[in-house]
Image (cartoon, rainbow, N blue to C red; front, side):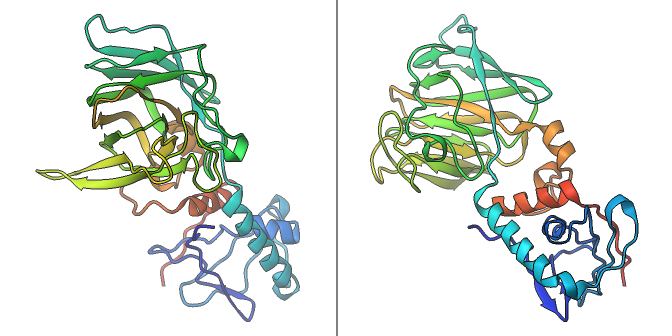
Length: 333
Protein backbone atom coordinates (compact mmCIF):
# COMPACT_ATOMS: atom_id res chain seq x y z
CA UNK A 1 0.00 0.00 0.00
CA UNK A 2 1.39 3.39 -0.92
CA UNK A 3 1.86 6.09 1.69
CA UNK A 4 -1.21 8.27 1.99
CA UNK A 5 0.55 11.36 3.38
CA UNK A 6 -2.06 11.55 6.13
CA UNK A 7 -0.78 11.76 9.71
CA UNK A 8 -3.21 10.95 12.51
CA UNK A 9 -2.56 11.37 16.21
CA UNK A 10 -4.99 11.09 19.09
CA UNK A 11 -4.31 12.74 22.43
CA UNK A 12 -7.10 12.72 24.99
CA UNK A 13 -9.54 12.17 22.14
CA UNK A 14 -8.48 15.33 20.40
CA UNK A 15 -7.57 15.21 16.73
CA UNK A 16 -4.29 16.91 15.93
CA UNK A 17 -2.08 17.21 12.87
CA UNK A 18 -4.54 15.33 10.67
CA UNK A 19 -3.10 16.99 7.61
CA UNK A 20 0.19 18.81 7.44
CA UNK A 21 -0.82 21.78 5.34
CA UNK A 22 0.69 25.19 4.68
CA UNK A 23 -2.76 26.72 4.85
CA UNK A 24 -5.49 26.65 7.45
CA UNK A 25 -8.40 24.54 6.31
CA UNK A 26 -11.27 22.64 7.76
CA UNK A 27 -10.03 19.06 8.07
CA UNK A 28 -12.76 16.93 6.68
CA UNK A 29 -11.11 14.05 4.90
CA UNK A 30 -11.97 11.62 7.69
CA UNK A 31 -15.70 12.17 7.33
CA UNK A 32 -16.09 8.98 5.34
CA UNK A 33 -14.73 6.87 8.19
CA UNK A 34 -16.69 8.71 10.85
CA UNK A 35 -19.88 8.37 8.86
CA UNK A 36 -19.38 4.62 8.91
CA UNK A 37 -18.72 4.67 12.64
CA UNK A 38 -21.42 7.03 13.87
CA UNK A 39 -24.00 7.12 11.10
CA UNK A 40 -23.70 10.83 10.46
CA UNK A 41 -23.80 12.35 7.02
CA UNK A 42 -21.07 14.88 7.73
CA UNK A 43 -18.79 16.06 10.52
CA UNK A 44 -16.63 19.15 10.36
CA UNK A 45 -13.59 19.32 12.60
CA UNK A 46 -12.34 22.66 13.89
CA UNK A 47 -8.63 22.13 14.19
CA UNK A 48 -5.51 24.21 14.75
CA UNK A 49 -1.95 23.25 14.00
CA UNK A 50 -0.85 22.54 17.55
CA UNK A 51 -3.84 20.76 19.04
CA UNK A 52 -7.36 20.04 17.97
CA UNK A 53 -10.35 20.83 20.16
CA UNK A 54 -13.15 18.41 20.84
CA UNK A 55 -14.87 18.33 17.44
CA UNK A 56 -18.00 20.23 16.61
CA UNK A 57 -20.39 17.81 14.97
CA UNK A 58 -22.93 18.61 12.32
CA UNK A 59 -25.52 15.89 11.94
CA UNK A 60 -27.91 14.86 9.22
CA UNK A 61 -29.88 17.70 7.71
CA UNK A 62 -27.42 20.23 9.10
CA UNK A 63 -28.87 20.10 12.63
CA UNK A 64 -26.36 20.74 15.40
CA UNK A 65 -26.01 17.72 17.61
CA UNK A 66 -24.03 17.08 20.77
CA UNK A 67 -21.70 14.12 20.67
CA UNK A 68 -19.61 12.54 23.38
CA UNK A 69 -16.47 12.02 21.35
CA UNK A 70 -15.02 9.50 23.76
CA UNK A 71 -18.00 7.25 23.16
CA UNK A 72 -17.29 6.90 19.47
CA UNK A 73 -13.54 7.38 19.30
CA UNK A 74 -12.71 3.71 19.16
CA UNK A 75 -15.30 2.97 16.49
CA UNK A 76 -14.30 6.03 14.50
CA UNK A 77 -10.64 5.13 14.45
CA UNK A 78 -11.40 1.54 13.49
CA UNK A 79 -13.66 2.63 10.66
CA UNK A 80 -11.11 5.16 9.47
CA UNK A 81 -8.34 2.59 9.34
CA UNK A 82 -10.57 0.19 7.44
CA UNK A 83 -11.37 2.97 5.00
CA UNK A 84 -7.68 3.76 4.49
CA UNK A 85 -6.91 0.08 3.96
CA UNK A 86 -9.65 -0.10 1.34
CA UNK A 87 -8.18 2.89 -0.45
CA UNK A 88 -4.87 1.10 -0.86
CA UNK A 89 -6.34 -1.74 -2.90
CA UNK A 90 -9.65 -0.67 -4.42
CA UNK A 91 -9.32 2.76 -5.94
CA UNK A 92 -9.20 1.76 -9.62
CA UNK A 93 -11.68 3.57 -11.85
CA UNK A 94 -12.99 2.80 -15.34
CA UNK A 95 -11.18 4.54 -18.18
CA UNK A 96 -12.65 5.52 -21.53
CA UNK A 97 -10.63 4.22 -24.49
CA UNK A 98 -10.33 5.60 -28.00
CA UNK A 99 -12.53 4.15 -30.74
CA UNK A 100 -10.27 4.57 -33.77
CA UNK A 101 -12.22 4.91 -37.02
CA UNK A 102 -11.86 5.38 -40.76
CA UNK A 103 -8.64 5.19 -42.75
CA UNK A 104 -5.44 7.19 -43.23
CA UNK A 105 -6.30 10.88 -43.73
CA UNK A 106 -2.81 11.80 -44.94
CA UNK A 107 -2.50 11.76 -48.73
CA UNK A 108 1.31 11.65 -48.59
CA UNK A 109 3.83 9.35 -46.92
CA UNK A 110 2.70 10.30 -43.44
CA UNK A 111 -0.27 9.05 -41.47
CA UNK A 112 -3.19 10.78 -39.78
CA UNK A 113 -5.78 8.72 -37.96
CA UNK A 114 -8.89 9.85 -36.14
CA UNK A 115 -11.06 8.45 -33.40
CA UNK A 116 -13.41 9.37 -30.59
CA UNK A 117 -13.51 8.91 -26.85
CA UNK A 118 -17.01 8.78 -25.39
CA UNK A 119 -17.05 9.63 -21.68
CA UNK A 120 -20.00 9.90 -19.34
CA UNK A 121 -21.08 13.31 -20.65
CA UNK A 122 -18.92 14.15 -23.66
CA UNK A 123 -17.51 12.96 -26.96
CA UNK A 124 -13.88 13.88 -27.51
CA UNK A 125 -12.24 13.78 -30.93
CA UNK A 126 -8.72 12.29 -31.09
CA UNK A 127 -6.24 12.81 -33.93
CA UNK A 128 -2.93 10.96 -34.24
CA UNK A 129 -0.37 12.40 -36.65
CA UNK A 130 2.92 10.86 -37.78
CA UNK A 131 4.73 12.52 -40.72
CA UNK A 132 6.82 9.39 -41.38
CA UNK A 133 3.96 6.93 -41.57
CA UNK A 134 3.20 3.84 -39.47
CA UNK A 135 3.35 0.06 -39.61
CA UNK A 136 -0.41 -0.57 -39.84
CA UNK A 137 -3.73 0.80 -38.64
CA UNK A 138 -6.44 -1.44 -37.16
CA UNK A 139 -9.57 0.58 -36.34
CA UNK A 140 -11.78 -2.51 -36.00
CA UNK A 141 -11.72 -6.27 -36.33
CA UNK A 142 -8.50 -8.23 -36.59
CA UNK A 143 -6.46 -9.62 -33.70
CA UNK A 144 -7.00 -8.47 -30.14
CA UNK A 145 -3.46 -7.60 -29.04
CA UNK A 146 -4.62 -6.53 -25.58
CA UNK A 147 -5.14 -10.08 -24.37
CA UNK A 148 -3.23 -11.68 -21.50
CA UNK A 149 -4.74 -12.37 -18.11
CA UNK A 150 -8.15 -11.06 -17.13
CA UNK A 151 -9.40 -8.38 -14.78
CA UNK A 152 -6.74 -7.54 -12.22
CA UNK A 153 -4.09 -9.74 -13.91
CA UNK A 154 -4.24 -7.96 -17.27
CA UNK A 155 -1.02 -6.14 -18.27
CA UNK A 156 -3.23 -3.06 -18.80
CA UNK A 157 -5.08 -2.84 -15.46
CA UNK A 158 -3.70 -1.57 -12.17
CA UNK A 159 -4.61 -0.01 -8.85
CA UNK A 160 -5.74 3.04 -10.85
CA UNK A 161 -7.09 1.62 -14.13
CA UNK A 162 -9.98 -0.80 -13.84
CA UNK A 163 -10.37 -1.93 -17.45
CA UNK A 164 -8.11 -2.86 -20.35
CA UNK A 165 -8.50 -1.25 -23.80
CA UNK A 166 -11.82 -2.10 -25.38
CA UNK A 167 -12.08 -3.68 -28.79
CA UNK A 168 -9.11 -4.43 -31.03
CA UNK A 169 -8.27 -0.88 -32.11
CA UNK A 170 -4.54 -0.25 -32.36
CA UNK A 171 -2.01 1.94 -34.16
CA UNK A 172 1.16 0.00 -34.94
CA UNK A 173 4.37 2.03 -35.23
CA UNK A 174 7.43 1.32 -37.36
CA UNK A 175 9.67 4.35 -37.72
CA UNK A 176 11.86 6.43 -35.44
CA UNK A 177 10.61 9.99 -35.24
CA UNK A 178 8.14 12.39 -33.65
CA UNK A 179 4.38 11.95 -33.52
CA UNK A 180 1.47 13.74 -31.86
CA UNK A 181 -1.89 13.04 -30.24
CA UNK A 182 -4.40 15.89 -30.20
CA UNK A 183 -7.74 16.02 -28.36
CA UNK A 184 -10.59 18.33 -29.31
CA UNK A 185 -10.92 19.30 -25.66
CA UNK A 186 -8.71 18.93 -22.64
CA UNK A 187 -8.73 15.48 -21.05
CA UNK A 188 -7.69 14.41 -17.57
CA UNK A 189 -5.03 11.86 -16.65
CA UNK A 190 -4.68 10.14 -20.04
CA UNK A 191 -3.41 6.55 -20.06
CA UNK A 192 -1.20 5.24 -22.86
CA UNK A 193 -1.42 1.47 -23.45
CA UNK A 194 1.51 -0.03 -25.37
CA UNK A 195 2.05 -3.39 -27.05
CA UNK A 196 5.38 -5.07 -27.79
CA UNK A 197 7.85 -2.31 -26.98
CA UNK A 198 10.52 -4.71 -28.19
CA UNK A 199 13.98 -3.16 -28.23
CA UNK A 200 12.42 0.25 -28.69
CA UNK A 201 11.54 3.25 -26.59
CA UNK A 202 9.37 6.37 -26.49
CA UNK A 203 10.50 9.83 -25.39
CA UNK A 204 7.58 12.03 -24.26
CA UNK A 205 7.35 15.76 -23.75
CA UNK A 206 5.35 15.23 -20.56
CA UNK A 207 6.17 13.39 -17.34
CA UNK A 208 4.45 10.07 -16.73
CA UNK A 209 4.28 7.16 -14.31
CA UNK A 210 4.40 3.46 -15.21
CA UNK A 211 1.18 1.88 -13.96
CA UNK A 212 1.45 -1.73 -15.09
CA UNK A 213 3.59 -4.19 -17.02
CA UNK A 214 2.98 -7.71 -18.24
CA UNK A 215 4.75 -10.26 -16.02
CA UNK A 216 5.21 -7.77 -13.14
CA UNK A 217 3.30 -7.61 -9.83
CA UNK A 218 1.25 -10.70 -10.63
CA UNK A 219 0.17 -9.55 -14.09
CA UNK A 220 0.01 -12.02 -16.95
CA UNK A 221 2.29 -11.57 -19.92
CA UNK A 222 1.05 -9.64 -22.94
CA UNK A 223 0.13 -10.99 -26.37
CA UNK A 224 3.76 -11.35 -27.48
CA UNK A 225 5.23 -12.21 -24.08
CA UNK A 226 6.76 -10.51 -21.04
CA UNK A 227 9.34 -7.79 -20.64
CA UNK A 228 10.34 -4.94 -18.37
CA UNK A 229 10.43 -1.23 -19.08
CA UNK A 230 12.03 1.72 -17.30
CA UNK A 231 11.43 5.43 -17.05
CA UNK A 232 14.41 7.71 -17.66
CA UNK A 233 14.33 11.50 -17.31
CA UNK A 234 16.82 13.22 -19.63
CA UNK A 235 17.72 16.94 -19.36
CA UNK A 236 17.56 18.74 -22.69
CA UNK A 237 20.04 21.25 -24.03
CA UNK A 238 18.55 24.68 -23.49
CA UNK A 239 16.32 23.54 -20.61
CA UNK A 240 13.44 21.23 -20.02
CA UNK A 241 13.34 17.45 -19.92
CA UNK A 242 12.52 14.42 -22.03
CA UNK A 243 10.69 11.57 -20.31
CA UNK A 244 11.70 8.24 -21.80
CA UNK A 245 9.98 4.87 -21.62
CA UNK A 246 12.57 2.25 -22.56
CA UNK A 247 12.50 -1.52 -22.89
CA UNK A 248 15.06 -2.93 -20.43
CA UNK A 249 14.87 -6.68 -21.21
CA UNK A 250 14.25 -7.57 -17.56
CA UNK A 251 12.06 -10.65 -17.45
CA UNK A 252 11.80 -10.78 -21.21
CA UNK A 253 12.03 -8.63 -24.29
CA UNK A 254 8.33 -7.91 -25.02
CA UNK A 255 7.01 -5.15 -22.73
CA UNK A 256 3.24 -4.64 -22.67
CA UNK A 257 1.58 -2.25 -20.24
CA UNK A 258 0.27 1.21 -19.44
CA UNK A 259 1.63 4.58 -18.39
CA UNK A 260 -0.31 7.57 -17.11
CA UNK A 261 0.19 11.31 -17.59
CA UNK A 262 -1.07 13.13 -14.50
CA UNK A 263 -2.78 16.37 -15.38
CA UNK A 264 -5.02 17.86 -18.03
CA UNK A 265 -3.90 17.86 -21.67
CA UNK A 266 -5.10 18.59 -25.17
CA UNK A 267 -1.84 17.48 -26.85
CA UNK A 268 0.79 14.81 -26.26
CA UNK A 269 3.97 14.52 -28.31
CA UNK A 270 6.59 11.80 -28.27
CA UNK A 271 9.48 10.38 -30.23
CA UNK A 272 10.01 6.72 -31.17
CA UNK A 273 13.68 6.02 -30.59
CA UNK A 274 14.31 3.44 -33.32
CA UNK A 275 12.91 1.74 -36.40
CA UNK A 276 11.18 -1.49 -35.45
CA UNK A 277 8.22 -3.33 -36.94
CA UNK A 278 6.17 -3.22 -34.91
CA UNK A 279 5.12 -1.73 -31.57
CA UNK A 280 1.61 -0.42 -31.02
CA UNK A 281 -0.54 1.75 -28.79
CA UNK A 282 -3.91 3.22 -27.98
CA UNK A 283 -4.98 5.88 -25.50
CA UNK A 284 -7.69 6.24 -22.86
CA UNK A 285 -8.75 8.94 -20.40
CA UNK A 286 -10.25 9.21 -16.94
CA UNK A 287 -12.62 11.80 -18.33
CA UNK A 288 -12.59 15.28 -19.76
CA UNK A 289 -10.86 17.97 -17.76
CA UNK A 290 -14.25 19.56 -17.09
CA UNK A 291 -15.74 16.32 -15.80
CA UNK A 292 -12.87 15.37 -13.51
CA UNK A 293 -12.14 18.84 -12.20
CA UNK A 294 -15.79 19.68 -11.61
CA UNK A 295 -16.14 16.56 -9.48
CA UNK A 296 -12.76 17.05 -7.78
CA UNK A 297 -11.94 20.76 -7.99
CA UNK A 298 -9.00 20.70 -5.56
CA UNK A 299 -7.04 17.91 -7.24
CA UNK A 300 -3.49 19.16 -7.94
CA UNK A 301 -3.86 18.33 -11.63
CA UNK A 302 -6.85 20.68 -11.71
CA UNK A 303 -4.85 23.50 -10.11
CA UNK A 304 -1.47 23.84 -11.84
CA UNK A 305 1.22 25.27 -9.61
CA UNK A 306 -0.32 24.15 -6.32
CA UNK A 307 2.53 21.78 -5.55
CA UNK A 308 3.54 18.15 -5.68
CA UNK A 309 1.02 15.69 -7.08
CA UNK A 310 0.19 13.17 -4.32
CA UNK A 311 0.63 9.44 -4.67
CA UNK A 312 -2.48 7.63 -5.99
CA UNK A 313 -3.64 6.61 -2.51
CA UNK A 314 -3.59 10.27 -1.48
CA UNK A 315 -5.70 11.18 -4.51
CA UNK A 316 -8.22 8.52 -3.55
CA UNK A 317 -8.40 9.84 0.02
CA UNK A 318 -8.82 13.36 -1.26
CA UNK A 319 -11.61 12.19 -3.53
CA UNK A 320 -13.45 10.62 -0.59
CA UNK A 321 -13.15 13.81 1.38
CA UNK A 322 -14.35 15.99 -1.46
CA UNK A 323 -17.28 13.72 -2.22
CA UNK A 324 -18.60 13.72 1.32
CA UNK A 325 -17.33 16.71 3.20
CA UNK A 326 -17.64 20.45 3.36
CA UNK A 327 -14.60 22.67 3.58
CA UNK A 328 -14.51 25.89 5.58
CA UNK A 329 -11.92 28.56 6.10
CA UNK A 330 -10.07 28.73 9.40
CA UNK A 331 -9.28 31.98 11.16
CA UNK A 332 -5.57 32.46 11.33
CA UNK A 333 -4.27 32.79 14.86
